[in-house]
Length: 122
Image 1 (cartoon, rainbow, N blue to C red):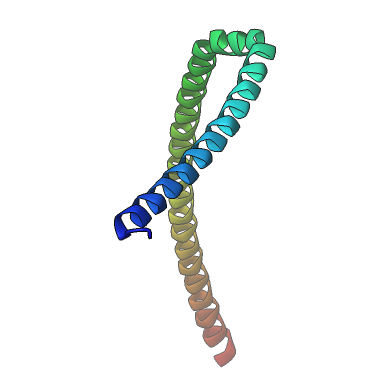
Image 2 (cartoon, helix red, strand yellow):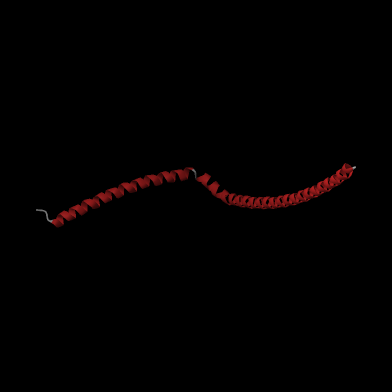
């Protein structure tokens, strides 16, 4: 007759054995993956070294490009401000000129009315 204790130990042993087998399989797959990664790293080691050597100059180029873009944006902003000021001045000048022209037309029309009324009565 099997006691509950023996049955419990048997179940724990089977669970431990299953976990051990699963762990062995997982470690085996992990080893295969690490071998593939090592092979890729060994195959492309010179390319990786070249890339790592060029990284500081690439970072410097990126910094220079960022500075150039910033300067370009600042120049564009200054140009837009200048154009806005010029347009505002032009509109003011045209508006002033238009008002002067309207005044001249009014004066001329008054002169014409006076002339018509003067010569129209005779």
